Amino acid sequence: MESPAHEMAQLFEQLGLASDEASIVEFINTHGHLHTGLALSEAPFWTLSQAAFLREAIQADADWAEVVDRLNASLHAARDAGGDPV
Image (tube, rainbow, N blue to C red; front, side, top):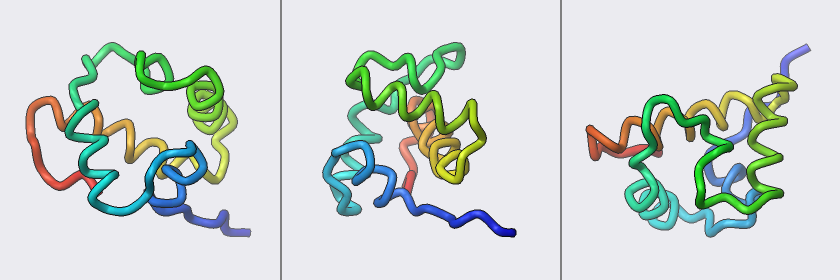
């Protein structure tokens, strides 16, 4: 059985953040400076509930895990690249 795939906009909605493409790009450009050793859920800009959701999505390998991994990669890569994260 195939897990449903979520898009980045759906993840941002789930996190209670603006989910249009411009807002996602702005969020990643603003917060995309995470150091390599910092786990996504440990970033200082998340609320406790957002951090818990991100942590649980990865730990449980939930259907959100793939898009959370993409966000993680975008926030870590944006530090050096500045490319289109969406």
